[in-house]
Length: 410
Image (cartoon, rainbow, N blue to C red; front, side):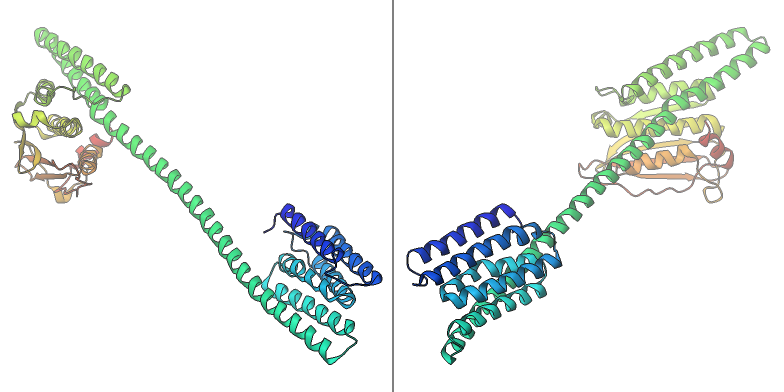
């Protein structure tokens, strides 16, 4: 509607058609009248190119008023010369609506054009009643049609502009959602890496510190054989830490592709037996070996964190790790006969929180049951349904105060 090239074609073609119709005898018969008609057509085309065309799409009030006045004069003179020249309304009305830029200006422009046509009819008919009636009828019908058509087209244009605005807002909103999703994904990835580092490298390094302290103490006490055995354990734990670091860099979990969950948990238990001296029994159902990789990773990480807490805080002599699959869920349960703690009176550290967050992301539930002097039980339950969403986190308690400090800074 605002493409100037199409308006150029319309004005040139329309003006030429009217001029040709006059030349073929559809207009005035006298030579003087034809000259006036041709001059009016040329003046209208000139007014379009000099005044109207530069204002298309710019909403210039001055150019609108100037073109409207010029067109009214041309139509009044041309129609007075020959009624056939009233056909210029076909071009004048649309241009008035385009240049007016608002409905109010469009109606005003249409009224001015209609009034000019009526004046031309009346003047050309010698101010007779018949000429006046013909002018009023012609101008009235053309004004009504032009106004109705202009309002309809304006409504369509406004609807299109509103659709375009809404589309722009929707596009901007989608871009914002993509940016937020990217930021959230990056944040979740950072949290995942933090959990993986805590559950692998940090735990291994903490175990190395404990074993190194033990080896130093044994060496000072003259227990050379015991110190040698402890150093061998240090070497093995260091090798395991190196493997875990490589796995982390390669963005792979500690659980291999083949079914080996029980073997992985047994290796963890062996490491923590060496660290704490506690007896650790491991029981893994054969059906648990068939769990998918993601669930095995969750169970293994939780077992690692739970055994780390047993070794570092519980002062237990016996701990059990059991993994079983029943009632549509995989369950990990870690129980120790250590000192326990009061869940209601303590806070949680990064390790406990990390376990709960990891389980929640897997769509499972996480529970910690403990009491002073009564040991601790950690229970993880992962549903086996493929569409399981983020599960609720049910934490019965946290770690004691010293555990909180140790968990935050392994």
